[in-house]
Length: 304
Image 1 (cartoon, one colour):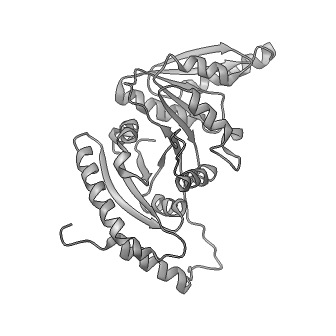
Image 2: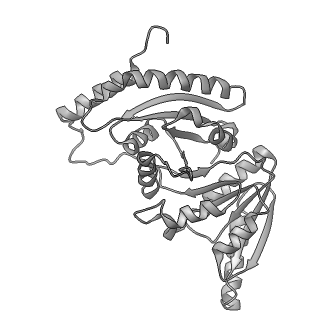
Image 3: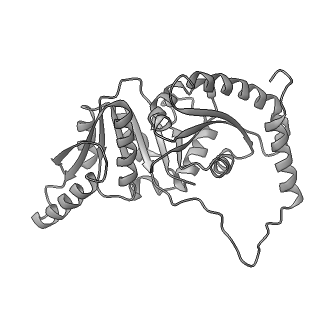
């Protein structure tokens, strides 16, 4: 990927500072840009047009944040999205902004979490509209990035994103593969060959690390203590389950230090074309909702 079109949705724009810092390497990459999306979720029984005042406040806040971000080389603009279902509003914004990397902040570890946001994140991770990164940001300077690879479906995405971070920060890229000591010598040779091939696909210097361990997770956690960022490609078992933010990811995020990204690849977003139905017929309710949303998102005060 020669460029990133990053979408960063949030329900709390005032607290996005650490997240924006964590994803700044993608915004600063050549020919890249980002959109900070203020998401306002309205109760189903309320018309979207009722969100006009909240949308105005969000726009003012997003404007201040993006003006501050302009001090760096990356391009970041603000946008407001009002929806009855946050995940659906984000999916629509992905299409409208031609996004190829959706960045979602992992829920905090505090007892009082935003349940609506957690639901939206789970929905988007299970069936992502584009490549997605679940990020838990940290303030520590990044000197070393660890990418554990096992050849899963998202391994190449993890390496590509990690390589971008290393290019922009000057950090060292460390690629880790863990061999099970119980596998045969022939199987280990095949794994090693695949590991070397995969780790050679990036265009930055790589330090390869190999370990023997019967517990992949524990080995990753021990090695992660030596690095300031960990980028994990989602395995099939990790993110293809109903409760995506349940035990597997929650435990892993809790135990890994520093910045953590769990990434998942998705096919390109394309419109489904039915030759028998060349035109989409929108019912009155859907059309009215679209008008309501446009009104709420685009009604500006004279001072704006």
